[in-house]
Image (cartoon, rainbow, N blue to C red; front, side):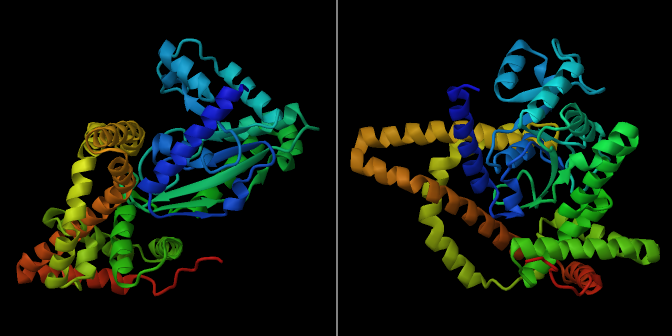
Length: 435
């Protein structure tokens, strides 16, 4: 590996970590010590957020990580050159278009060789990226690659599969919460003897262990409807009984475990709860009222107006200076047919637009006002941008509370009745968060 590629990887890793720290605020990593890789490892994650998941996983390790990617990215010569350079290994799936020069046997051989030589690989074993907080059936390829590599070098280093779960409160929204949970590594050598006797059973066993771990590492909902109701409940309860992101995650996970049991023992009652939550979510969406506003209407009008007025000058400074670099990636993200790609487009395009406009604007200030003002301007850019994001969220909250006050008494009573039913029915448990 050339020094240039190593240096480029380190630089890109820094950009990824920095941009993610700004986009996903706050981010909590549970079990981060397991990301200090000391032996060949396959990092296996859930996959709701396309390229962001791969970068989130690789960017938090202490090693260079290769990526298993779908062969569709290798359709053009430029794609082949670029992704080969960026540590990617193509795998052709049934649904992928033909990709010249991609042979799965060659790709698998590269994976085996890379692991035997002590390397690390990222794989999304679900086989595709689909939004939602749940684990879909895993493909067996991850286990096959790990077991075959271990079989080819039985006296070599022990290969591990490391499950990592990502839970995004909203994958494509600036300021969303991200909880990263790192599971217990799966020692592939423990299954090697069984694999030599019965490959299919051993592959299935490891795949089942991965699936079980990943379901424990995220908020694994049973359906898209349950995911939507969970989101409403999280926002309602967090507004009145706030917890840290870590504690909030485990509180929601305790609800899901109760709901699963509830569905099995009293499906009629569970269905009533789910229908009420879905109806509340639909009503709030139509009225453009957030669940937080329905749960917490404590901000006084006078206090809100004062905060908005005091923050207005800094908001205007931040808004004017960030309009172009922010609107371009946002606009391109809205054009994406698949919502899973929105965060990828926003962050990657934003790295380009913010770097370009920050540089251009600072040079213009330097040219007009001189060194001192240019330095002050540059130092103010990022804080003012973060404040602008906060100011917009606060303004959204105030507007939502105002809409709630303006609706009819009958409609408001209906919303409050639905809210009270959900909160009353939720398990009265704490966060159950481990230390």
